[in-house]
Length: 634
Image 1 (cartoon, one colour):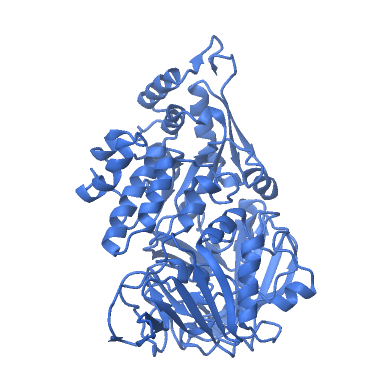
Image 2: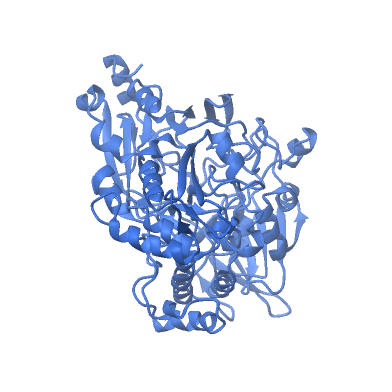
């Protein structure tokens, strides 16, 4: 389950599952204790969705870090727009992109495994084979950043606070899954799950909750639902040092951080400070990087990467450029429709509009052909649906077809993918197809070239954006939509306006660029992202999807018990989501483009699922001193 807003990292580790065993066994570090009523209890240092954990209980450090990485220096980056809150758990305001940095969870995932979670705030966990409950044995040495000890009461309080005041969609899913949370003693907390819901992922889900200080929350009259420039008190290695609202945030590493010696933290949390600089204008942000106002840049604008990294600091070697391969799942970046609006209820309208986005021309003309198209909700993974469905997938889809929830073509055809277009901005063939679809949907072209419905209402469409660098992509789309007879326009607003309009309760938009979220081993979070029950309260189900077929497939997916079954169900789910056509998928690249001043270093072999620049990169003080001495850096 996900509790944080778009700009903050997700707090939950990967969904998890334990393979079923019987009898009294010993497997690696895991010990089994049989209760009087013959219930097998598993005690372990972590939990895995399918199969074994990669790392044993006595591991020394993670494989993708340098355990001897030096501490010191600063990591500084930029972020577009601004912020007015340090509360990442509220839909009110716009939180700092790193606002969740001070908080830790009981369990934590790694960057080289999928579906595994390891103890961080706990030393071990206990759970039965069916995962109907879980006990976390908390580390007594855990302290909040103010030096006070963390106890089971803080965990229960955090759970209850998120349950009662977290994001609306999160609260609904939590309420239906978790029966109770209780402190068994000062350092043991037990979560019991409701009957009738799949328990496979729930131990890791509750283990992924951010833990905050009860004493601080109560004493300072905090409110999780309100935006606040005062951060909560967490147990993490970094705490707020200073900020200039909307412009700069600096987090400082706590030298007394309780968990710095843990094996899972070796070689991580290496920077003394982490600084984020905010810029409303991307061109100004780039110039600031050239001037050394910040020193690390993940380049997301291909035009800049291809054309503008030819300035003196790059030529002299003061700034280095790296293209680092990434095996991470694509973000699911796409235009998404607001299905709450009547004009988008007809799938033919959505299909027609989708035909007007010319990815092939955009990629060739604007992106130098370097991007790939996002088609799947699980793009760049083995779970993306391809070709005709397998017999196993078809078996899951057949009941939905028989009940009239899906078209029969889903049983034989390849999954729905983005339109293929020609070399010109306006593909005439796709325009003809789109025109036919709009005609069939009852939007006829009038004498003025504008499409109207039977009531005489003109079809208006607003493309809403808070990213000026997207103008060169959005404007051609708007032009193509106008050629189709739609009264289309681009509205560019600032970040605060965007958040206010797109998030609940307003949902005041037609078409926006958002991220269609999924996880590798999907769990209850799918109900937040795509479930009908959360469509009108969710900060993640931005499009307002209410699909009986999707709801049914979520239940099927949650009930799977093996990796093979989950893979089949995920591919079937991918087909169903794509058939709904509530998105116009955009693009991705299986690599990170990084420009940085040449005093940052990282392990030679990248982690497969994360760049990790905040976590396991480090600062070379000698190189930094040399750059400053040369005048290349202030």
